[in-house]
Image: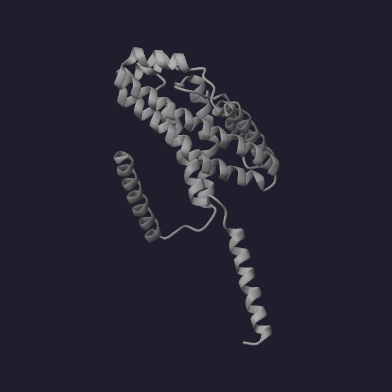
Length: 255
């Protein structure tokens, strides 16, 4: 191979790598699109399952004492939706960032930081419910009440998520990612309460319902904007993911 041929081959390989890097984005069309659909729906289901109980923590603890399976299902569905929201928000920020990078950057970052806060609160919720189970409702209520205002670093993230949803809603509208109605629906998430042992209310249902209106159709669009994998690939990935979830479940139980 002469020098000219080698140079042409190297240039061709570099161009191919550059093209592939431009095609790739994180978390990707499939993860992002599916998360946009399942994340809001999981949050909505979690909120609806506990809407019959008052949203303040004494009533949430009492509800767990009387209906433990229902409350575990509610809080688990909500936490699962919270986990799924980070790839959904990352995908939304990418779409907005194509023309409005500033709104995408700050809105996406603020919301994702807020999702960390919600995950932290979910851990406290779990401990509080286990205190009801092990020590009884009265002691659990006294414990939560006595420590409710204690400072932790995550407290600084509580207001961040509210501004993040508003920034994303504005960016979604200005960029043309969402129309006016669905952008307003997305912004309604800024009204969703955040904190320890927060139940559901009509405001919660409206806020998360707005999120579903905004993101679920967009998730479907994201999934359709590209080649469809073969049935063999879908089956293979499905079996792999189910097997992985089963393994992680039993490892978690063993831990």
